[in-house]
Every structure is written in C-alpha cells, then in structure tokens.
Image (cartoon, rainbow, N blue to C red; front, side):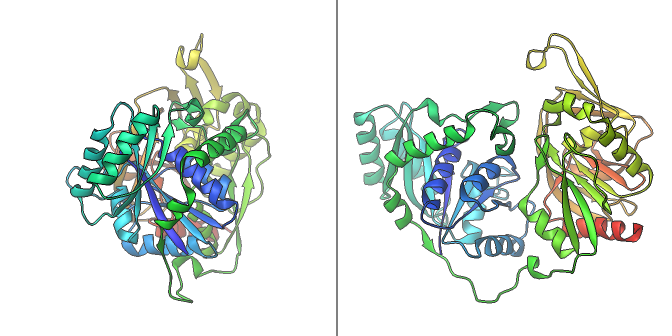
Length: 458
C-alpha cells in the first residue's frame, strides 16, 4: 500500500478541494482510504463520499502514539492508497512551541511524505522562500512535492515553478489556476456537511467539476510516485479487533441535523457489544433501544422540522426521565434544552425565532453567540454517566446554552469554555449533554462506562 499526506501553507490554501479531487481521481482505479488530521467532521464527510470508505481522524492532542497507529492500520486494511489531509497550515497546532495537534506531528508519527499546497496568489520567487522556510522549520518533516494554487497565468506558473524546483529541490507536481469552481459552499462554521448538501442542490455536480478541473492541472502519476510504500505486520491486532457479541441496542441520531460522528465511534461501540440503531429526530419515531447517542450537527438550521416532530421530542424527554442513558454532544445538547432561540438579524431573520426542543434540561439555547473553537481538557466526575476519567476533546460552536443556576455538571475543564465557567457535561439522571466532543478512541473508557450503564438498566 502507498501513502502520502497533503497539507497547506495556511488555512484557505485549497488543500481540502485538492485532496477531495485527488481522492476521487485515485478511487476510479484504486481502493482509497482517507484520513483527516484534527478534530473535524465536515471535511471527512466529503472524503468518505468520494472514496466510499469512512474517513478517519488523526489528532495528536487527543490521541496517543499507539492509538494513532491503530486507527491508521485498521483504516488501511484492504486499501491500495492512503491519503491524509492536514489541518490548517502544516505547523499549526495546540501550542506555540510544540507541534502537538498539528499536521506535522502526524506526518512524523506515521513517517509520511508531505505534499505542500501553496497559495501562490501574487507571489512567484517568494513562493520558493516560503517552501524553503517550511523545509527548514522542521527538517524531520519530509516535504516531497509542491502543488501551487491560485496561479494567474503561464508566466506566473513558470517563475514560481522554476524558483521552487531550483532553490528547494522538490518537484512542483501541479499548478492550479484561480477558479470559482474551487469554492465549496460555506456557512457560519465552515463547509456544509456532505450528508446535508447532497440532494439539496448542486453539491455532487460541484465535486465532479472540481475533480475534473484539478485532474487537468495536477500530474497524477508524479503525485503517486511521491507516495511511500507502507506495510504492516500480518495479523497484528488493533483495539478495534476485540469484539464482544452484541447484547445491547444503542440508538444513534443520524439525519440532516445530526451527523457529526467520528467513524471510529461505531467500531468502538462494536467492541462494547452493541448494535447501532440509526434514527432521525426530524423524520422518525424514537426506536426502542437500551441507550441513545445524539451527536453534533446543525440543529439550528432545522429548528422548525425538529419542533414539528413533537412525538420524538416527547419520547426523548420521557426516555430521559425513565433513566435510560442518553449521551448528547453539542448539537445534541442544544436539542435537549427547552427551546432554541435564533436572534433577530441572524442569517437575515426579520424577527426572533423561538422553537420548542425536548426540554430534558431546564434552560435554552441562544444563537448566535460567541464563536468558540478550542481544544478541551478536563476531568469527568465519578457520578457522571461517562464515568470518572481525565479526557481531552474539542469544542466548536456558535451558540450559548443557558441552564438554570442549580444545573449539575460532571465535567470540570482546565482548558476550554464548556457550558458555563469551565463547567461542561450537564447531567440529569442518566442523561449527559456537553459542548465537548470526545474522540471515541481517546475516550474509549468513557464510552465503555456509558455502555455498561446502559447494560445495567436492562
């Protein structure tokens, strides 16, 4: 199997569209496994769609070395090619003086060659200085090739290419002109998730257009020649291989409003002896299950539809009151409050919009609010439905959840904002709702505790 990592010189370099197109092009003749650096749901939704395999996340802030190795090894089974998409710029991470959480850290962990996407708008010879700086900053990161983006014309391309290949001694394997077609639909938190976008406009057509155009400007043969041959010891087990025969059913909310899940979650649930039952809070009735997981997403876009399904909202509230465990992250937390308030002026609203939600937690969600993007670090209390644990995760929201003053919290954060004053993980009975997104591998013990709680309730 061959593998390579694609990263950018900065956010907005075009690496996501380029990686997406390269994955689609290679998938025509190969089995391609994709990975995404960082705690992100949206880019992986597109990479999964074009490769027809679940994209998996790799993050050195939340995950240890052995966990990263296990995810990579397990994900690559049966694949011919592995493409890893970076996050932001190559060296952006959790800290100023450490590469923890960065793309560079993953490149070194997995010993992968790096293809650097450089936004060359308005620069030619300076592009070589930029690449040279990336090479010198950490020589243990092997920059094997460069793709230039936002090229204006033939002269621009020729100067930048000649300078980089002369001064940096790496090949330029592509030069992509600035095109409107390279811009995927954007929203307040980034790209629209593929599940929501597909069937709601021209998303699939856009992806096909991007793929066709990048295919004209990137030399696919030279790209594959830069990849490293990767082999794994035969019959080496991973943490995903310790399967337990299923004796529980776990309902997982999955629709347009709730679709932020790491692919590893479903494999971790299998190791806990569960069968996953997907359901839609917008369209369905609540299925019978021993516990429920309501992940993140964009419930604020579907407030009217969620409000209209009052049978679902009533069932979720009653299920929580009956002590059946429920775990909700971010969008799921918002859904469990009494109401969601979308303020006047937000996304062009002429007046404030108030929609009833489940009412599990006494309080409301207000949107928009302060935009929060942060790694999270904290402690889960002994009486938490997720058990006592130290954890690392991520929060990314544009809303504010305001609960009653006597609300109980099971997470204390040393890093991150949470729901209130560095407190997160609101708890009522066996229901927990948090802004913190946990990686299911890094926090496998917490998910096992949750499943054990579900098992005790049967």
